[in-house]
Each structure stands twice: as structure tokens, then as C-alpha cells.
Image 1 (cartoon, rainbow, N blue to C red):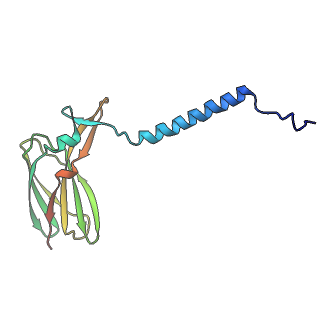
Image 2 (image 1 turned 180 degrees about the vertical axis):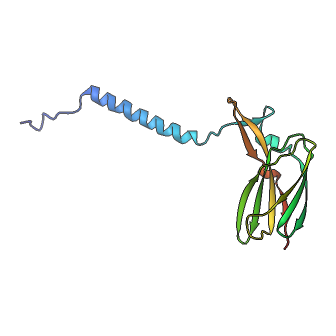
Image 3 (image 1 turned 135 degrees about the vertical axis):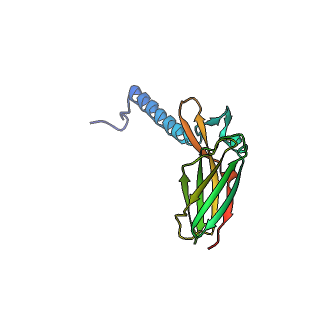
Length: 155
């Protein structure tokens, strides 16, 4: 029988192993938490895509025929436009649809678009550029949200 003055504790080896394990677990938690703040760097022509998006310039004209909208797009900038995201807004809801057509530098295109949301009152056309992920051979599309152009629709 062990008396009150003869308490047994953890051996120093076990205590050291537990402290190291606790430190590693905490370091892993901090690493995973901090990794969420660092996004992958996407570049175009050696510059971050947010700077390149400012160089994207396009003229947008449209002809509306009922629900169909014919977009006429001319690329006025010096950056090729990869695709377009089009946001339809109306009736208290909105949806964004990716349209798979691009416009080269100095090029133009005409496309008919049929909104997927009932009768939207507004369309916003956002250009997308294709950037390179830094340190990888992967290309990734980036939507230039600040360069979107709005169209008011009537029915």
C-alpha cells in the first residue's frame, strides 16, 4: 500500500514525449489555420492577375429580342479575354453562368444569350482571363469582377 508521501508520477521520459506530441499537434493546428490566409498566386505576363484585370477593356453592346439577348463584344484591351461570366439578376434572385467564348486582343464576337432566370431585369458581364499558377504548369481562369459591365433588360 502506498502512503500519502509516496505518490508516484509520470516518468520524465513519458512526460517529455507527451510535451513533444502536444507541441507538434499545436504547430499543425497553427499551420493549417494560417494556410487558409495564403492563397495560390496566379499570374499573367509575370504580374498578379488583379493588376492585369485592370488592363482588360472591352466594349459591350446588345440587342434584346424578347428573352434572347444578342451580345456584341469587342476586346479593346491588350489582354485576351478567355471566357465570360454573366450574372442574371431579377425577381429577388440571381445566378451566374459561365459562357464558353472568348475574344482575342482586337477581336470581336456576337453571341446570343438566353437568361436562365425567368425574366431578369439586369445582366452583368464579367470578363475572365487565363492565368498561370506560380510555380506550376497549371493555367487557371480568373474572373475580373471589377471590370464587369451592366445591361438593363426590359420585357
